[in-house]
Amino acid sequence: MAEEKYRAELTFDAADEYRPEPTPAPEIPAWKDGNIRIGIHTSIAGEITSALDIAAGLGANALQIFSSSPRMWDRGSVRIADVDAQRFRARRKELALGPLVIHCNYLINLASPNPVLRARSVQAFHQEIVRAMALGADYLVLHPGSSVGSDTHSAISAIAQGLKQAARGLKLGELRILLENTAGQGSSVGSRFEELKAILSACPELPLGVCVDTAHTFAAGWDIRTPEGLGRALGDIDRIIGIDRVAVVHVNDSKTPLGSRVDRHEHIGKGKIGLGAFRRILNHPLLSSCAFILETPIDKPGDDKRNVAALWRLTGRVVRATGEGMKPRPKKRMLSARKAGARRRQRSRGK
Ligand SMILES: [Zn+2]
Ligand SMILES: [Zn+2]
Image 1 (tube, helix red, strand yellow):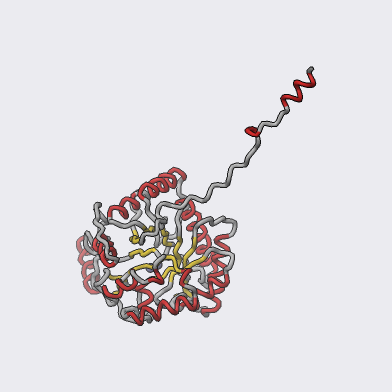
Image 2 (cartoon, protein in one colour; image 1 turned 30 degrees about the vertical axis):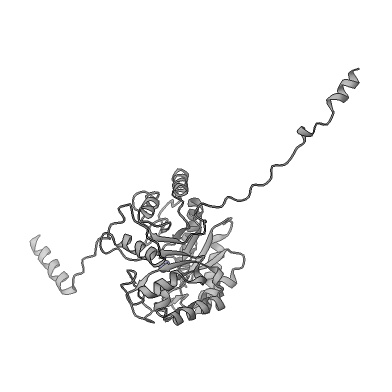
């Protein structure tokens, strides 16, 4: 009897069968809706989450930020607190902003021949990756570096090694590191697409891509003002690097002329590149999967709104800003050496 009961309890019931949960398909972020993405570099002054509201208020649907002070070496802890990172991610989801691009600190030079500066650069870039992952960034943009006296070949291998050292032990997940092309100022690496390609090829294990800056491309000698010139530049990028590795275009007009190798950004349509060229860039089929991010100056209040609106207009859309926008950076008062000397003398007399 007891034995029968025991057997009955063991009867197989299909409902009890263990079925492993199907692995959920990775969630597609709200911003990957196939629409053109227009963003602007937005200030994180105050509270980092406010950058998201500023960008959305300007009519942008993507943004770029720094994740710490861009012209200072980090002091002490530079991690983003979990609660801040969570708030940032949640707000970004609400606003459906993306991609989120983080631009690295300008002091990082993975090619520095000075061992102290190079070690500091590797450490700082490591921290950039950690912060980018905490914030859930899609892309981390880095200037490749400057050879400062060493040859380009050694600089390229130092950069590749530096990228690997900085990323060691980190699981980058969806984050991609983008190397930005440069104007070729001084000894900077990356004004030739072959140099960027050499770095990419030396790091097959890293998720690397490219960010193309229009002002840098123009200053480095590609005449992107004409349809033919733009076609040649994009053709070179595609042949040398592969256009599918370009994820972000920095959309900046240029204060400096073609081939000047000097990097000075200007408002869209107000510089040497001109509005017609930007219309072709924004609507170019080879760039249709790129995000377009402005890094234009803010000389007067409203310049940020005007530049975002200008890009939308060039794509044939009207997007109105609803927010305040960013404040112009206080202008450094430029005094001639003679006047400054006179002031100093005046002040010391007054003491
Ligand atoms: Zn840059
Ligand atoms: Zn740029």
